[in-house]
Length: 131
Image (cartoon, rainbow, N blue to C red; front, side):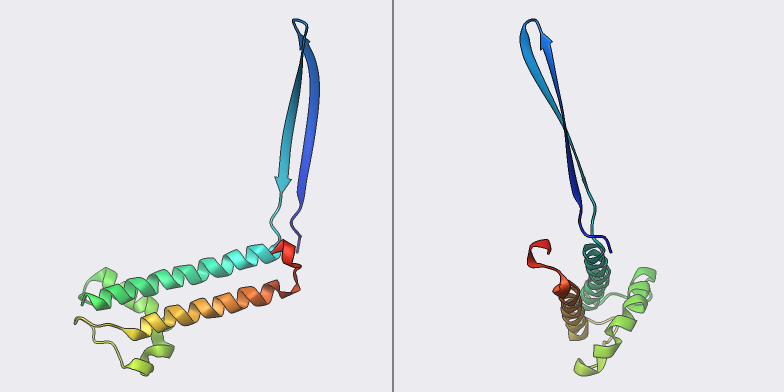
């Protein structure tokens, strides 16, 4: 893993034009991202995508979307695996009827908390000023 590196270069040039002195400073800066920060970003991106699909599922069930529509069936099929561990807690969803599905909301909360815990676990070894 590479730690964050920052390099700053300053180039100075002095020229004279019509008896006046002009100083030019060119500054270039290079920085790289550490592996830990990259891992955190990947974790949050993956959980964010999952949460967005679960939120779409929640809204579709809340509005009673027709499962026969291709998009609705795709969303239900895609998110079914993520909601499966939570379905038995509040009952199975009834497709095609207006339903407030607690399982999707619980899945969003649990997956977000698990991601937060993993990200915090990754940062345990880093000094506070680098986080």
